[in-house]
Length: 435
Image 1 (cartoon, rainbow, N blue to C red):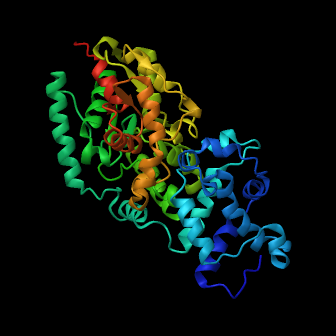
Image 2 (cartoon, helix red, strand yellow):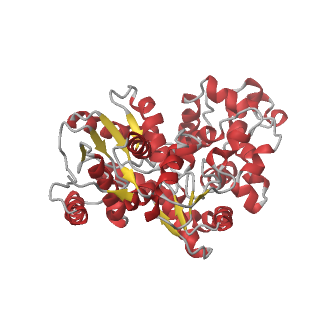
Image 3 (spheres, one colour):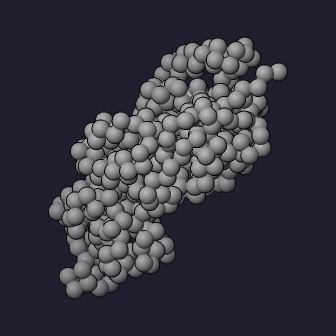
């Protein structure tokens, strides 16, 4: 494709980003939408606002019209006849508002698409074009920059992390009444390298305590790295393959340096997708070790009897929010249910649930894009109504982005619930057997 010389340097780079990704998969998705409208009823933005621009098929059209204009013969000569569009300022402004500000990339639209268009894939491609124009929302880009320059998305100094983990280790020993209980740091040769969402040491240290208690009860051989531990990869949301690959490569190298047998990912929806499924494509090599969600690990402990649970310790009604990238896009669906049904006495599902569950509104980088905060809370009303209808007093979700969004919804919509991770609920139900 010869890109018009009349375009600015930024426009040319943006279109070149599209051309680089134009394989059979992308061409198929850009050419297949039949505009049936079924996807509209799947999207929380369209359901909340009722505006045509938020219909997922129209988000696909944002990119498809540019594809037709610059990557097809008819688009060069009779663009209006085939619905093509120029990459002008109006187009770019509309793309930013809808592609970044009107989509969580949750994928619910795709499972309801009559022909299976992978709409989040198309949206991420459009975001990669906006990246070349320098139009990633500033708050999202700052999160990525922090991860690249400091090693974690919250720029936590290493010594601050070490101090927090050592304090948590002391508390763990008191709780289980065993001086041998530990949170191992940078220990080579362990079975598992465990990761963290940086929000845990910063704001939710009890979630680290919970998993440390579970590992203790299971007699697990594990370690944390204080050099490379961030399970998140917000470059997945911005469409920045180079930054995404850099972050994935660092974690890959750390696991190899510590000579572990397995990489266990903390409760993070997009972190699981980015590392487990997208990571090998970015770093262009397969992992030489299993990569699992900690939810899968906990379920395996329960099944094998390595940990024992007493559901009577959690008598309050509990419901489960399914993180989109872990469940709909990641395939970890039943493990959390298996665990919760053994860790609580009163578990109730939302309606709908599993792969059909509604996004909470915090995905797709929305939680880190302060520019669209009001819109994020607005679409979250659908999730708030789901929660209220269950009558639950505790909402469990295996994702810290979801936890943060649900915490805001809890406050705004006055749900009067507690928000917890799966590990926290399991740790409360643990039966610690003494030697």
